[in-house]
Image (cartoon, rainbow, N blue to C red; front, side):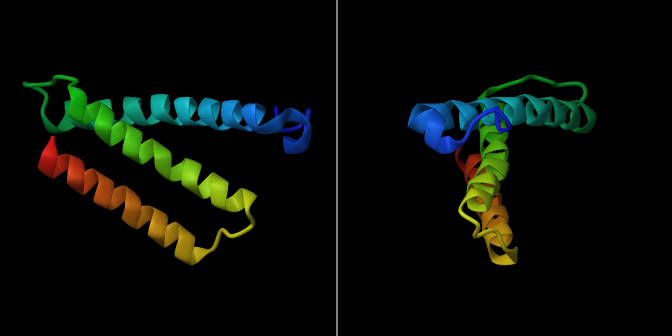
Length: 98
């Protein structure tokens, strides 16, 4: 999709579809990784619950933020650090609330 067209030609809906596809792909990969870590850390009581999906959604949104910053040409060490802080705080909130 990236090599076939430009954001101006495809429009706002096409950009939304592109970022949604990337998010769903990353969500699937991160979900598999989180599931493996849960099996390793707690093999007897392994259950996929809503907390797993919350963690996966927050962690999956980190690369999307970095991709958006790259598209604005403002990706630097500070943005990577702040994105990491955002993901960490989101996971901390899920740990305390859910």
